Length: 334
Image (cartoon, rainbow, N blue to C red; front, top):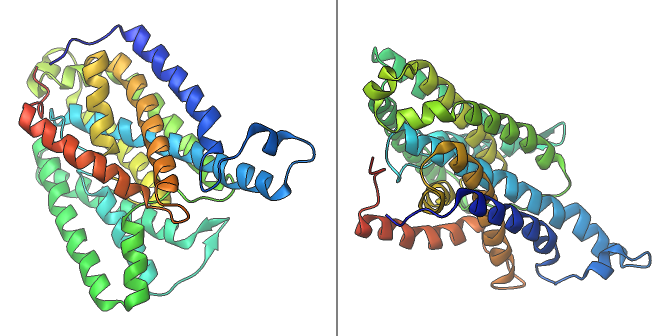
């Protein structure tokens, strides 16, 4: 493994890239805007509306969701001691997709306090998955990472089969809606999604930061962590629910955007090392930056059409996954 760079320099670089991303990304899209066109007093009202009601919220949502996915992947990679783990490993994305597919198949159309019904249905499906994974793990008599992983994988297969069944029963329009939702997307209007995601991402980040010492211990193994005074069961439970709720919120709002949570933590680990006191901040920043620029690419690649951002991340993540396997960097290597 390559030698990590100076932690402080990497974090400062990522923070600078974050500021640059926030300053540049909102101006890019189907039509590139200038600062003058959105700030001048006589600016085009349409462009101002597009910038402030669509592009700026979209960038903020992508930063929050990308950061949350990267943190989720980082935590699960530490818990399972495998750099190939993702935020979707324990079936949360499958449950959310199942909830969304039921909503679409039933032809429902409603919103609650400005939150679309499909988002609520997806969140309820994700919560169902969280409860089932935890219940199955507890029912086995032990809360080990292996049992939790097996329960999550089993539920992922079950929900995938259920979604295929719902698609089979749906008409063409409904089947296309389900397929489109599976591709993920960051098309938001207004700041409702931003305000929904902000407390969840910030709260989850604070919990993870509080448990970074325990995360470092978990990467050495459960017995070693327990020998260092870590309450392994309590820590694993808190991290499981924290990450699962964050991922549930992201998938409900944006669909299952894959590979961000697998790539971002691993790249940051190569750059900054495996100490979660620094890796947490690096993953949060890099994940948001990465997803934002993937979304910019998705909007500009085949204008006037827009590619679902999940396709872009998968196109990048597939080769990255293969590189991990070939280079034998799939494990933590402790």
